[in-house]
Length: 304
Image 1: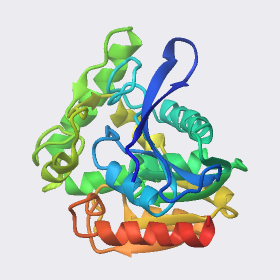
Image 2: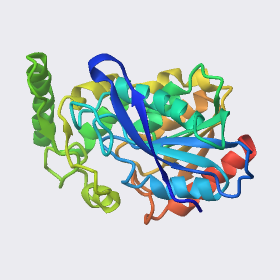
Image 3: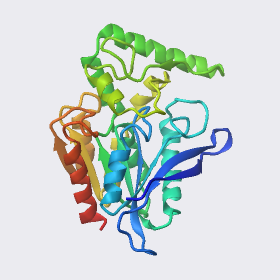
Image 4: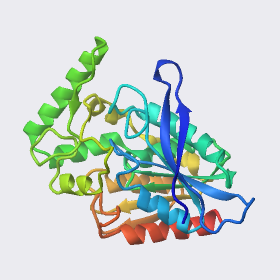
């Protein structure tokens, strides 16, 4: 298989415009001059392309599909400021810019773009695919599709004192940024009882086990106030004509499985279930091989 090609593309406008960085993997076995579908990929909350995405991208490329795995503005190898601040709106803009970048790569069929996203990005791809004729299929893995449902689940599983501290930090971050000052950071993952966003038992070890060299264990604290309004599952029925695979971890403590299943039903999606938690579909975890095999099988049937 060919080595990844370093790709740079521009995303955003005005003061928020910046260069995004990506790795492009050509499709294995493609005849010269032929065009293959391309899977456009990004990570979830605070994730980077070098933190668990490449095993999926390599599997798609080996199966005959090109793949482009990118970092959002402000994360990983990409440019842009502020750093480590999660904006669902800007990240969805980055997906759209990445689609254009993928379509411009040699050997890619611009009319057969596949969107792949996990966790928060599993919700992004549902939004980005709406109303586009160039999206041939969508794969949404352990998706966060309803921020309110995730907040309710968090309230049941986290210690009350920890939740109160996290909520207070998020509200304070909003006030600070409104004054034009730099947004305070919070840990992305940490031990149970900490103020980290992902602090359930086992999550720190699971996330850091796939973390790459550009990953940083911090995100802007204001994301705690934004996730409640992040509800891409509400529009899932708009995708009823697009082949959609939703991969649900039935023991997911971070992205509620029932919310993902409801969105999948609305979109008439194909659903695959796995006996694991949120991170168990990544490489080195129990459900990874099955998740990859199901995704490739789905692409063969729906994209060709």
